[in-house]
Length: 380
Image 1 (cartoon, rainbow, N blue to C red):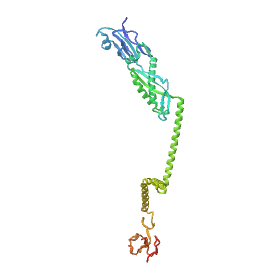
Image 2 (image 1 turned 180 degrees about the vertical axis):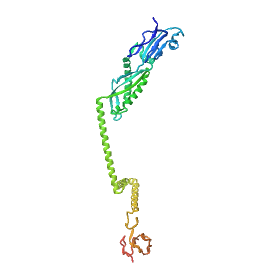
Image 3 (image 1 turned 30 degrees about the vertical axis):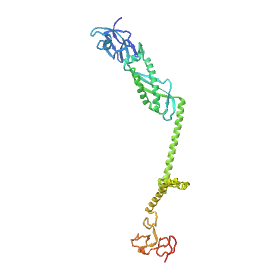
Image 4 (image 1 turned 120 degrees about the horizontal axis):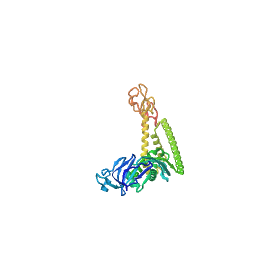
């Protein structure tokens, strides 16, 4: 058999893997590997030395694996029998893919499971020809781009089908078209590690369309409309509640009490209308603190009103109730009960002139004949 002195492949670009027809070579033969090519030597079913683009003279120093198997003579001409494969490493783009059957997706917003299919495109590039030959080619003499595309399209679709349902379930059906870029990246990262085992790199993987089963799409739209109606009603109720609360707050402001006081009044009213209060000692004991709380509140409000000058004669200082029958001898100002000095001019009062009712003990104005509290006639 003739010894080949030049080893090269200059076929069409549609051929992805080409097995050189001759298998007998010797050292000092020339190997020519063009751009976007890789040459891999096989022997007895094992992938041995590989060469990137360039021109090589086959010597024992640059084919160490072959030399180890064949015990080639260093520095001399040694014949050897191997198989040579040329790999097309050019990038192949626009490989269309689509799920052959629909996957089940659960919408996160409505909890409804629907059927959907996905489609898109991707590109591939061979990065390690040795891995590809070991895992894929076997004894094939030639593989075209269309054959390799079909094989990897089917492989990727199988991987994608397992990933696409998970990715689509992250978004509601009416918004995932806005997230196709993120979905594409996530799916590509998941299938990329599987394809890397073949020495293949995934490029520009895209999910370009998602198609939902028509019946499921109608049901999702119905759920969406129902949810929108509920949101609208909830918004209207909330706005009505706000308006009602604002009106009530304004009414309380006009009437002069707070929301907390109103709540206490309501509790007090309920407390007072409890028919079983007196007949149920346990219930009575449980509500006693409430009664005290209400009493304290009323007392605080009355005290606040007194401090604000809301009681008494407008002509006197706030908080002082005058005795209408006792007047200052100097200025004529009415003097409070038991007052020792006039609140207007400071004149000392004549307390010894006071007369007290013998029945109830109330101080009586000078010259009064009857008690203003109990009506008892004054003792002369």
